[in-house]
Figure 1: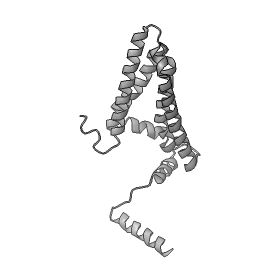
Figure 2: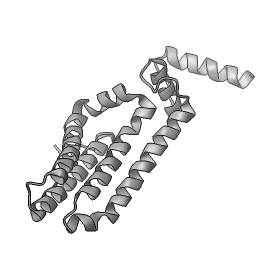
Figure 3: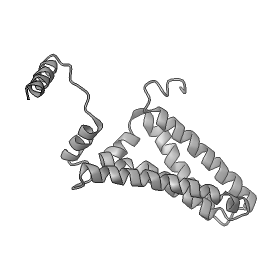
Figure 4: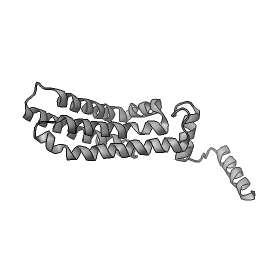
Length: 172
């Protein structure tokens, strides 16, 4: 108890000096939830389980889409495009469990993240559009879907770099 009291006193002193400690991920999530931005009545553990479930589900669908790559090349792009895009959407949406949908949307559209996030989401929609369009030849569909996938991967890498300090500095 004495040590805990000393830790609290040290934190209070640091706070008075303006040296606030960084909040842990759990504290940040609980703070966001307390502000009404989280996943309503889900506990911290339930939110982490939802997050992990979406990430793992997204990874599974992305891996499963690779099995469907042969169908894309043989003229049936729909199963591949749907699996790949749903996997990406699940992975992208997984953060909603941790920080809430509104905060996740604000994070996506903030500053340097807005352009790569917009390109990423647009390319996912274009992938689905091309996959379900019957007005294109087989070769056109394959080329366009592969182009959309390449742009998705580039936009995703660009988006991820926005979370790394100075990560995007060499891109501009």
